[in-house]
Length: 409
Image (tube, rainbow, N blue to C red; front, side, top):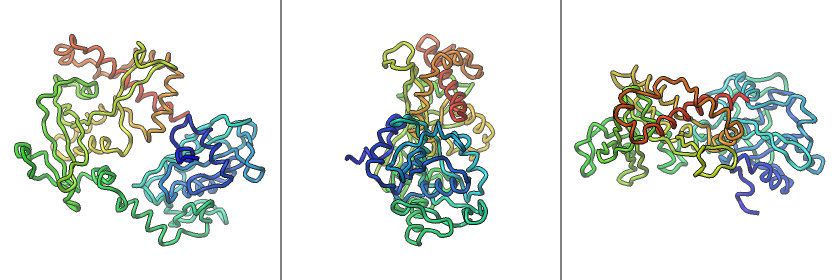
């Protein structure tokens, strides 16, 4: 059995993944079976914490509807729907607990399996957030999830509620939290998430001295630097530039990140007016079964939450005298760039949009956001694909609106 068969890849493969996990006739460090939905909220919170803190930093799965005490047969969650919850209801439970920082990113995926339906709580890994733990006790009596306790998965079981992880396991989680166990490229988003830890400096790289005011080094880890330089030969127009109602032409920059003198990553983006916006990752979306050349296929851009692009877009917020304008343009950008919790959520959302394609197109046609049609843009680019870019902006704005609806289902 290949490694991929035992690890989460996408929602479409969940049924096959569960089948492969069941075939092992075991639970593991990142998956757990439940016959039915929890009657106790504290049990649900405890299971989610243990899986979110799994030592392998894997996408964790709480599989509900599999009876491990009855030869791993299906216990249909539709037929036995007592206490059943959707994504919003699970997150409502998590919000009632007093977390040290944030609670795990959890969503519920229902999928047909064998002769019934199972629910899978997909718990996305977030190394920056672990270890998850509570600041106040949650629950009563023996069901209490204790404040300060570090709960994890050990082999095929959870740390009991009245215990805590060993010092060695806890140290490993904190190393992950602070990025000590990460490669330089993996550490970059975490370091960039704290803009005040970076200092403006002169560049030491050839041909960069003319852009010294766009060079930065990390104050605690000066081996990390980045240089932002104008790309005067790049004149393509992308829809995300319409985040500024004053847009009258592209203003491209490259951002190059270094570890010592080794280039780690290079991204491109553009200044709208006051804010640098990294170019979002491009993707296509369309009706079910449509090929890329289909007339209804729509191109859009997106960020993954806590990615390098995500933090770079936020890097300058509040740092200058135009902070109010920065924030205004940030909100405009987030109005036309969907931000997904994970690749898994993005793929699930695209499938959902395909199922409601007619509704999506109707909403696009009625998109009310005011910055979709700036006069300067129309005057200068209307003849060169301007309508395409405007339509992409409208489509992306509609995706942002519908992403909230998707998460509420």
